[in-house]
Image 1: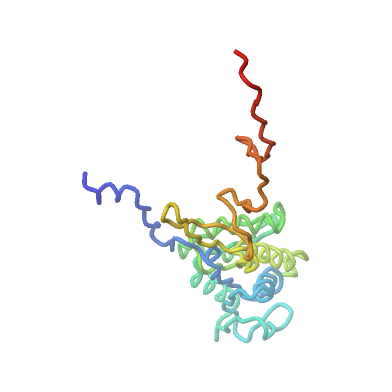
Image 2 (image 1 turned 60 degrees about the horizontal axis):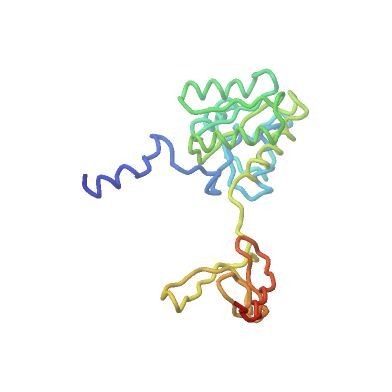
Length: 251
């Protein structure tokens, strides 16, 4: 068997069709989609806007909502000549997957979204907010995103008139979800520094603060070692060296 053939066996297989290999959550480029209706719809957008995540979606003509009009701070696009049902269909179609939030019973807009997911062959995940806390829901959604390699996630749930916990649940779930993404690096952490080993001719990496005194491979400055001491094998302690027997041999 040739070397190339052996190496081929250990190559990671390509991701399944329709998956990107790395999700938007893992790369920090996840986009949250909603129609900005009251309840879950606005809750998820509020969290995304507050945390600086990309978000948007389609809404009905005139930005109509059950409380009047969708405020201008929600970055949704008005579908001219279309109603709320068509905006749901458009969001399902334009997204990589849909998280359907409900509280014990699936009805109204969540039910419509589920029907469109089935019709269009789009992946979806059902989230029962009646049984799960918002943090638990975030983990379920995160697994869904990673499993399917989603870059754009559509989230839909009950309106405020259907559940008084809808807005808060959507807000907290997305806040926890985005918190599961990549964390920014801490610049205050000590950096790995390369040092040259004159004896071996190679280099090695060591983590040490600037201005340290020279030492040996154990990391202890040579000046701090006391004469007449040795290190016990297998421990980090030192013990005084036993004095040699200086008595003459009488035999």
